[in-house]
Length: 225
Image 1 (cartoon, rainbow, N blue to C red):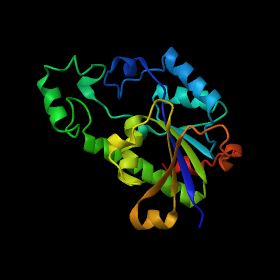
Image 2 (cartoon, helix red, strand yellow; image 1 turned 45 degrees about the vertical axis):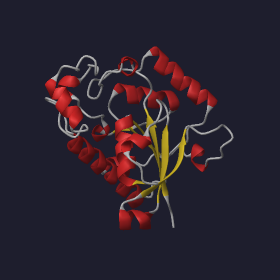
Image 3 (cartoon, rainbow, N blue to C red; image 1 turned 180 degrees about the vertical axis):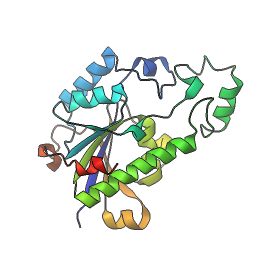
Image 4 (cartoon, one colour; image 1 turned 120 degrees about the vertical axis):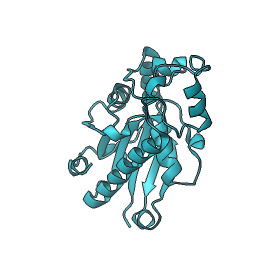
């Protein structure tokens, strides 16, 4: 039976990452180190190509995708934005150490909503709904492979919910510019809403990947999202 692949990549480094800030809805670009790191990874390793390319609308994700796939014509998926940290945006844990709302948010393991922000439940719901739409569109239109450049929290949320082997969000960590490939088996997806996580990205240079030469883009997937 035909299977489908999605390659998830986390964006490169921003100043917010360097300073340990809560950066979700704040639209930071890659910093100079982030740009150079992505270029180095791209020159040293191999990123799989795909039939279609999707990205978070945040510039750090769009920049990362354009550095790795300069000829791609990506579709922006608004639901693949990082969680909105509300009044905590741009601040560090040190900045917020005496903030009662921050203490309550930490006590909830991030499931409560920060002031003017987004709860963990709402974040997970929008991310998972978008992911399921992509999977269903791929199977409906026979798109064999997709690259998604997004945020670490988005990727970890999807893998914790659907991935095999099963693991928590914390266990699905990844460095900037890195990620995971999943394989969708239609029978398993239909029966259990589970996907196979089969490799980490990027790949060694000697890897033989059949997706590299795929250059076509099927617009039907984007129209259904």
